[in-house]
Length: 288
Image (cartoon, rainbow, N blue to C red; front, side, top):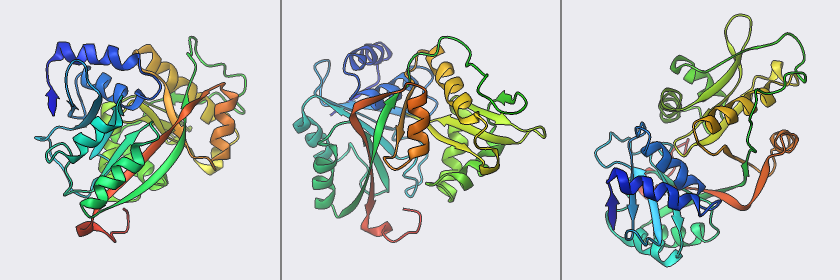
């Protein structure tokens, strides 16, 4: 195992990962954030350098952690050889097996290999699989002719609004998620539409892997074109900073899939896999 701390090597790694799209997108996004101030306190672990076969991004060991916070305790994985990834899994100090955490990636063997090692350590593994998407470049301001009603006020979210997102997110509703969302809003780009009173009615945020997530419109404000406006605006904001505009969508989320198709998003040939790993000590907790 090698922890890559050299800023020059991290920039080289970023370029190397870009040549491995789309499977490397999650790790690439995390490395881009590390190279631009590292607001989420991440670090890179590899099997070797420069001819690596597996690379993992994780929370820095010295960063403050909550053992129940699988949102923040998140690892992104990319490998050229799945055996190298398994070897890193089996090393004692790469993953923290004593906390609830998640592993993300875009490669098909990720679940089986991770589960095999996790089961040997008495951890439960929950898999959720998504369609992976990439939005085409948005070179101009979004067309607003599709909007219904008066032109909305388009801005960004504040940390004070994290509670609203926590209550409306299907994965939320708990203390760990509230803190996580507040950190995302503080660290990464977001976009929202506000009503005449200044309250958010439609929004989307960016996560620690530079992925567009938590796109949501309050029920009473749907079918006005707000989701389309928010998605295009956030994609343009990310692209203007050099980031890919990537996202994930569940197979049964027909509304979001329809929106993405209308935006001519590219549905990638690989799938996004999110694994939540829970030690027996924490099994049975309601939000896990």
